[in-house]
Image (tube, rainbow, N blue to C red; front, side, top):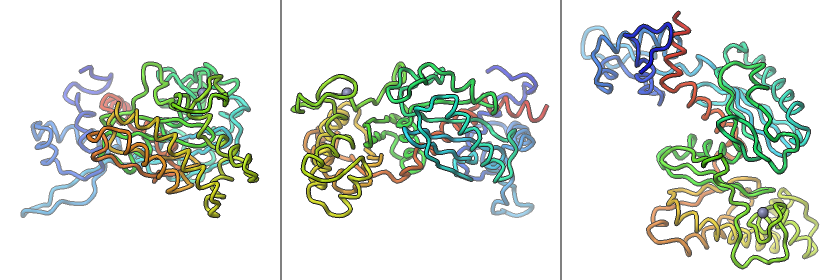
Length: 398
Ligand SMILES: [Zn+2]
């Protein structure tokens, strides 16, 4: 292991030890020595360095076996904050979270992604600075920035790659732009990937294998396998909206130019078009959700049918990936059980028995906050990784 400049060789591995405290549970030096198989003196030196850096804080005392009770330590989630941004086609959500991913302050506004990167990023930067001011944290407390965008992203560089609904954003250097204001890593990902991560860290950490499908104006998916987000070779994994559905009408052309795409027959605009053809006055996903809530039979049927079409594609995914949970999110998931019922009907009927044995198909729990929670989790993973912690401790204790 390379030792960061400034961190004495005896303290190499401090970030590694810190990983035992990532879950937020308080532990004593003795417990840490036992868990890490390190000498007590080594643990003491590393804990002292982490305490000095501020990343660790004492949190009361363990039960004493006689004599002075041993001190327990835990992650100091207030040491720094994370700026989390979720950009949609027509909205921008900005939040400040602590190092445990809890939202401290949040603001969501209408914002058109088609206004282009300079205007949109300037707007979210301004909001971010306002939120920091509202909670009394200086800009230097920002450990990093996570941002989700509604299109494919080359994750390694943070640059959108030919995003269909984001004119002007192709190849734009988002990290460089936000890095002008905020220090620390600026990590960019597709919004659906971050929704999957947000659901995973808030509700399904015990599952390890999660598939999130977002059904709204478009359809996309995020894949968590073995507890990790799977982005694919170039970051476009999970783009389920343009999978061809068997038996789909061949006269509906998708915005991608193909026919029979899942998105062209089962996303919000397609369902709304079907309902308008039946004489209903419905525009967009919210209109569909409202019609379902009002008990409109045609709307219920159309949503359930969309669920079946989505289920056809998901059944293939289930056979391929064997997830333990499928989370259905996005605006249309607010149509409740009708969408889920259609999905379940086909997935349980068409996937292999072993693949569906323990499979749960559920609605989102994080809801509209899934994206910012995922953006925050992505940054926390980066800034609390062993090497990043070593660097931080070296810098803080220099
Ligand atoms: Zn398509």
